Length: 223
Ligand SMILES: *Cc1c(COP(=O)(O)O)cnc(C)c1O
Figure 1 (tube, rainbow, N blue to C red):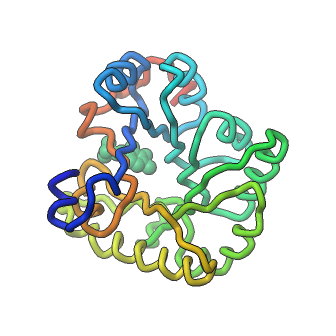
Figure 2 (cartoon, rainbow, N blue to C red):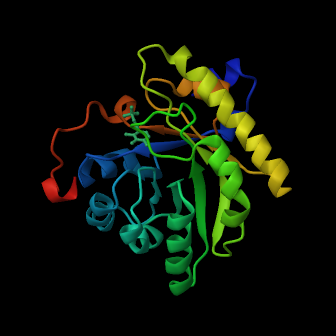
Figure 3 (cartoon, rainbow, N blue to C red):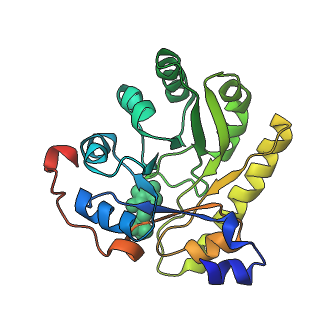
C-alpha cells in the first residue's frame, strides 16, 4: 500500500486498510488485532453477528457485502459503516432502523461500474437518478462510493473501472454540492491499481490471511 501511494504521489495516511475477515474465525481476528489491525470487513451479517461479540471490543467493523432489507436492523447495530447500499428501498429500511436506534449511519453507495449481471450495485445512471432521494434520508450519511472490479488475473484490467468510479464520485459531489470522502475499491488482486486511481479504503482478505477456509468454523448457517 505504501509503495502504491508513493507511485501515485499520495500520502499513505490517505488510504485505510479494511482487513476482510470473512470466513476467518475470531482467533484469527484477535491475532490480527494483536499485530495492530483495528478495522475489519465482513460480507455477511449473520456471520458477523456471531463473530463480533467474540472479538476484542475496541475493533471497528464495516459491512462490505450485499445487505438484505431483513438484516438492516442488525447491520445498523454491528457496523460502523455499510459499503453496500444499492437501492432506495434498502436505504429507506436502514433509515427506519437507524431512526428506531436513534443513530446516524455512515454508508457508501455500491456501484456496478462494469454492468456485470452477477454483481450487486447501482448502474451509474440509476445512481445519479436516485442520489437526491438517498441524500434526503436524514439518518444516512453518504460518505462515498464502493465498487468491485470484474475478476481478472491482470490488475490493469481493473483500472478503467476504478477510474470510472472516481469520476462518478466527482459527478455525485457536484450534484450534492458537498465533498464525498471515500472511494472503497481494491482487493488482494488489484489494490495497488485502486490506490493509484484514488482509493481511500482498500478491502483486503487473502493477502493478509491466506485462502479462506472452505467452511467457516461458525457453521454453515453463518455462511
Ligand atoms: C471477499 C471480499 C473482499 C476481499 O477479497 P480478497 O481477494 O480476499 O482480498 C473485498 N471486498 C468484498 C466485497 C469481498 O466480498
